[in-house]
Length: 127
Image 1 (tube, rainbow, N blue to C red):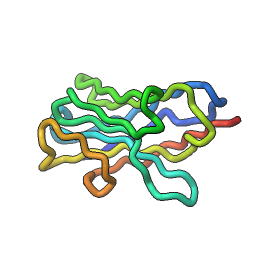
Image 2: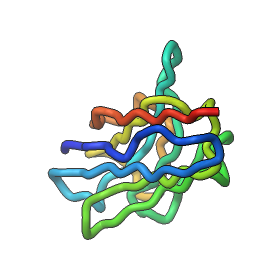
Image 3: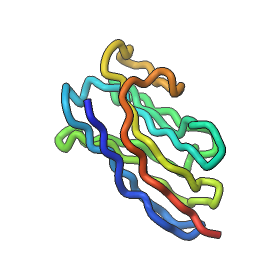
Image 4: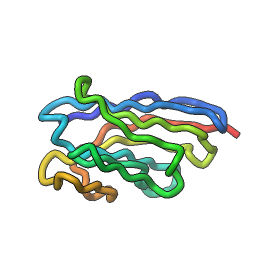
């Protein structure tokens, strides 16, 4: 499977962005999907994830209520809507997928759970 993230850019604090992740190959609806981010000098961290069932989503504590993960199965695309952005949200954002072995209703939040990664898109939030 191949993933292509897009939609990053420069935004002022308090603004919004919507990231997209186009997924090619395999059966999109079978994948567990996640978003992660990595700020300069820091480790990659969990942002949001959706299960294969697409009925369970989970968010990192600091993103809860501000970010929303969603999917369009017709377009094989995953979205991350980010509202009320803060300077500390500045990072490269990555989408990732679990191709095989993901349990139906489980949401995976560890970097090591995912076996396919997109190239990342940079989000910069100015104060």
